[in-house]
Amino acid sequence: MKKIKIALILFISLTFSFIGNTQVSVDFKIRNLGINVDGFFKNATITTNFNSQDVSQWTLSGSVKVNSITTGNKKRDSHLLEEDYFDVNTYPEINIVATNFKKTSEANYEVTVKLTIKKTTKTIKIPMLISNDKRSLMLKTYFEIDRRDYGVGGSSFVLSDTVKINVNYTLKKE
Image 1 (tube, rainbow, N blue to C red):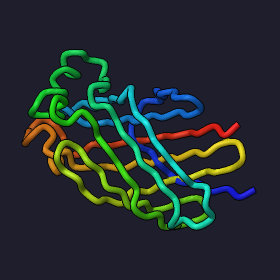
Image 2 (image 1 turned 45 degrees about the horizontal axis):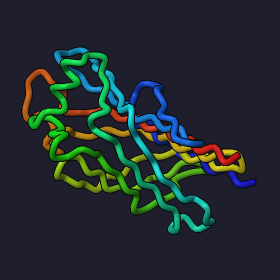
Image 3 (image 1 turned 90 degrees about the horizontal axis):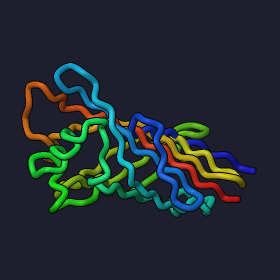
Image 4 (image 1 turned 60 degrees about the vertical axis):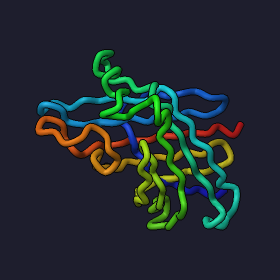
């Protein structure tokens, strides 16, 4: 039995979406007016294929429905869907696709991904912990992005530029 672990820690609450035999959480944290604002997306999916021993054959992609954003404040959530933030009417999803996996230690990888938010796609590298055995596949990652790189929120003196993202994924095989 071969175990592989990767650290994917994208967003910050432990709310999971259940789709069949999978659990997905995509959480985030950003400072606004000096206070941390935590949130998550209720509707996120991840598709994987880690069946090959050859990591160059592995695939990973994910999608988040922007209109499922939840921060605990309905007025703020509605504002985040508007044109100056996520522009949900034009860009209803955030997408990520892995293009390369590089093993950095026993269970950790550096994963090159293409992250698309609104009309902008950027290639970034994220650390990932992957655990793969007969019962389940688990992925965890944590990374940070600059929201301005994706045209989210414009310039602001009160809103942090850095968004901390935590993603957790579990696929039950049995």
